[in-house]
Image (tube, rainbow, N blue to C red; front, side, top):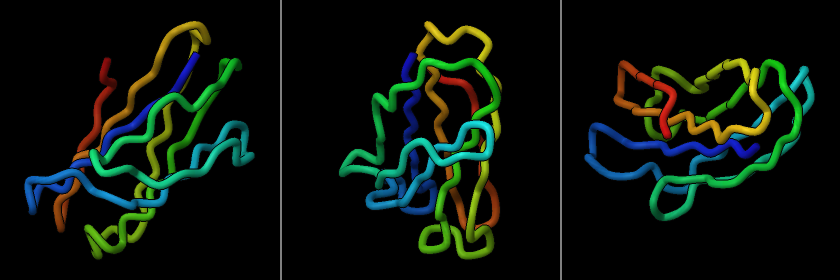
Length: 98
């Protein structure tokens, strides 16, 4: 299984570049990275089912939300899980992507 994310800055209409993101599983940090030029982090490997958290340091893009935490459950460890984040100054949204 892999986990990926894509962060878009809706105010600027561009990818959120250089955003720090942390992946947690069972309260433990399992990976950390920054979004690339396309706003993506791809291919974080993970082989375990359970509850995961993506913790985004969003303060530079959306100061009202200095941190966004997306919590999701993996029940099928063999599947790819893509969890995008769309940011604006006073709102954010997410979904399970493909």
